Image (tube, rainbow, N blue to C red):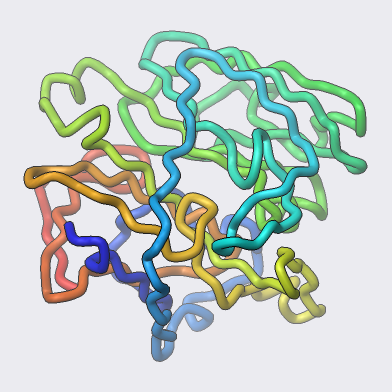
Length: 282
């Protein structure tokens, strides 16, 4: 894949190539909200290398905190983060094990973590009633009972979910199992996590200020970030790559494709592998 081959097109997509629903953070949508002409996103300069989130295997210590990151090249932006900049580590787990995650709340408001897509006991799921107050903490013991899949985690406090995700609190959660290992899919440096989010900026800083209508229909940004960066590139070798795509936006859906008419091979979607390999054209 050449550096300019990854193009983002926002609008409605009939093919799910990402994890989770784009409208999980807003409950009042209909199919009509998703129908219409797509808005084309202008490609950026592709002049900074893609950042790959760090990996936490089997356990993780997360600190929800105020942070600063270089989301736009050469500019510092105020964010919320589980680490530095934007987003948290990719947590990896294997079916059959229990993952322990600790959360420290260094924010000035309540927060927690919802494990989107994971099958968990009710008291570990991150329900809005189970939150950490400012200065408080939570511990999650997550028994992994499902098959391999790509999931994610994000806050779920009542009335603050979309804002906290928009400002940077989210991360990918990957489950592996023996069935997946037997497929011999591309791995390590050939397995690339791609977290897509749209952001609105005022000056250099993220701005989450929805009006009453946008609170119901979703707050959209005009800049598309990949792993917390605007218009990064990834240098690749000849051969196969596995790309795990997560729509981490609070409301926007995407129609993804490659420039030049190249194809993507879809091997899975929310929660598991496809029965058959499917290809899609932009």
